[in-house]
Length: 331
Ligand code: RIB
Ligand code: CA
Image (cartoon, rainbow, N blue to C red; front, top):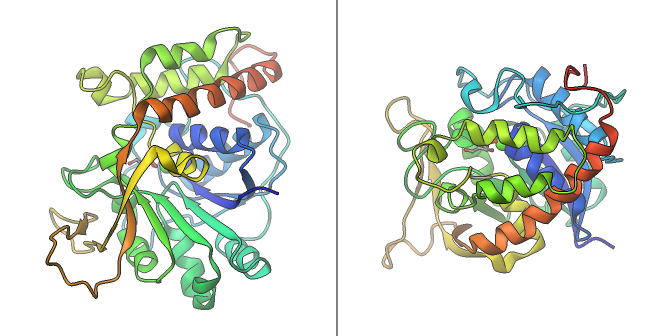
């Protein structure tokens, strides 16, 4: 029996793809459902990408469409990182398939699955947390029934979409505030650790060893590496793969250091909009509710877990990809 029954709510998204591939390869994770949410790209794109990823990885879990828009914030999509499709490639695209999304809205699917298995379901949020906030608002009674919420988002210091704010939280800070206030056991993977969760260019190149071409997974991650500002500036030896961090923690928690900290989010328009705040003073208010925040990562250990999983996935997908790279991402 898998140790972790997870619902993955994501906005694929290159690093979302890597996270799903890692989860799919792990014997300690059972993916119960994938929910695509508006985030890196419009919902139509993230749903299409999630279906392509699920089909390419032979996942038998359902894919649901989640929220089409954040609660209040409206923004331009970060095409510079994920391209117009949200999963652009430097070469081959994922193979065509005939899968479709389920009828039920992703937020309702969360409610249904959590109520069907009280204390069993871990929600992994890899994009804006709109669906999780919707589920907790439509049915607040599920809060004590969720095993845990594990999310990639926020930062104790420094942002990526603004100088202070991280994209997933900034895209829907009102949703993040609802989730953080819900009292669910929560673990946060912010930029403090995910910016250090890079794969080197050599580790990415290894995804091509012994794999037939076309190799969509390697080509898709190559596009992501080419769009990394940190790689271009020589600050990191490869692109940060943010979203696999929560999945890696579920599989090998010893790869991360975590700290119990109070975390809040700024929902006020202005320079700090979407910023997450904490308080690490020894004399802080002990009564303030806390969540578990990742503050350290064993980067080599993370790469040692992720690279073989991506290599297996690359092989699996390449075997399906018979036609040249003119194919679209699932139509
Ligand atoms: O800030 C990183 C996060 O924003 C990741 O989830 C990435 O996929 C983008 O959505
Ligand atoms: Ca994401």
